[in-house]
Length: 149
Image (cartoon, rainbow, N blue to C red; front, top):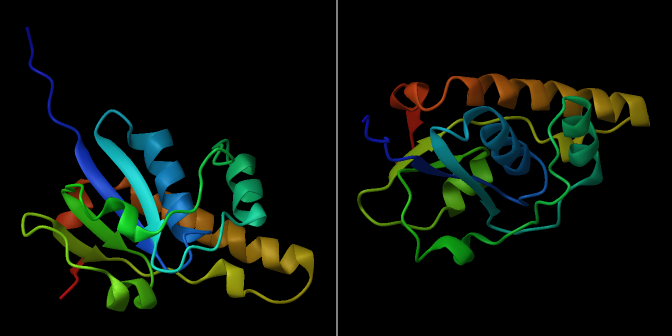
């Protein structure tokens, strides 16, 4: 009988836990649930952005049940990796236990997009797809992603 490999625990972190980290958590649960447990948080949580929910649903991933969480909720938990997805979170990321690996993979903030609704949604879709492509490479690519110092 084959022993089951322990799932990696990964926390995706961005500023507001409203778009990028929510998308990453959703993609990871959708694509990688057999290999990892995914969580997301923010250093200044702002609620899940309705546009993030919309564009993820378009891709077949339902994040409507996710909620915006402060990183403090996770300080007493252990993770294999904490992956920051924006510079602000990279700078504001608290220290986790020493065995936690910190990585940084930055993405544009779709919540900062301006223009018509369709132009804004276009930015959300682009970032959604970039994050989805990144998550598809996990966990192997984490060895090659920039280490947060």
